[in-house]
Image 1 (cartoon, rainbow, N blue to C red):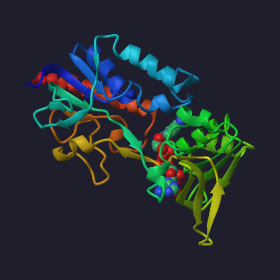
Image 2 (image 1 turned 135 degrees about the vertical axis):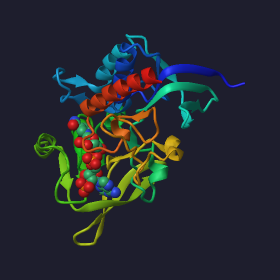
Image 3 (image 1 turned 180 degrees about the vertical axis):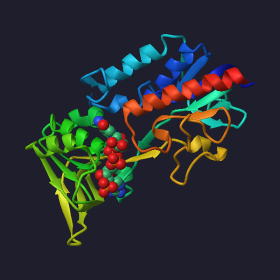
Image 4 (image 1 turned 45 degrees about the vertical axis):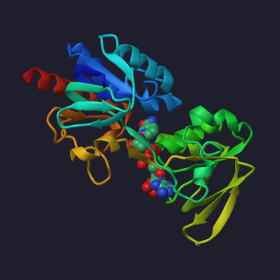
Length: 306
Ligand code: NAP
């Protein structure tokens, strides 16, 4: 017999959006639980330094995650380890272990995961030289050469961090220009350990004895392939929303992001969404937190109106 529990708010995902929602919901007096399959913090756990969260001039991602977590549970919100299998229109959250959580309101804050390169050799390379987290793995590449793919804030910030360990970091971008902030671009271009290769895309990962040894890239201007010798490959080419478990609710757009209005309401009453999993323009820690606060406020009104 599956275990059943009742909550006024069930928050799925414990990144900045989910933790803020937990803080606001529990502080408003709702019986609240947040669920995550891993430690609370979301992408903060993979972020070296945060210097654009107001009021906190400079802090490591894991430290900010820990502070947010402690504050989020300080008003009574529970944290539950678990993986969500599905959510139905009656606001029942079903976990993979069979547990059923009956929720007055559900807040989806599952964020997004890293997009893979999708090139030859990648499946074998993941965990054997290909990594999606410089903060976690950079130390394995001390005095080694690594390649970073992508020109967004993630790629440039992680490349910068990798230079603390690697002897050389090559950034590959497919256009002439970066997508990242001016500050991140300036830091990268001023770093002697970083080289930038423009208008090129990765084509094939080379491996020997179970380890990455190089990357074949394709130059989009002269239509030629070349090989970069490297020990590590770090792709940061964007995100894929973690929304598969709600695909049957009819709340996703064609890219898999959740459609939510300015009150974070989805098309299903009582099911709200916030943070990187929703369709929006600016994905930042501070915007995720703002979304989380709004979602919790809406959850409060929905539950008290029931
Ligand atoms: P992003 O901004 O979408 O950048 C993705 C990068 O990958 C772009 O340079 C893109 O190239 C490239 N790319 C995409 N698909 C590719 C492919 N198949 N092959 C080669 N290159 C490919 O993603 P992100 O850096 O993960 O950032 C996500 C969001 O989080 C953004 O809103 C970002 O501002 C935010 N963020 C903020 C901070 C901060 O403020 N400190 C830190 C990290 C992330 P094109 O430009 O040519 O499309």
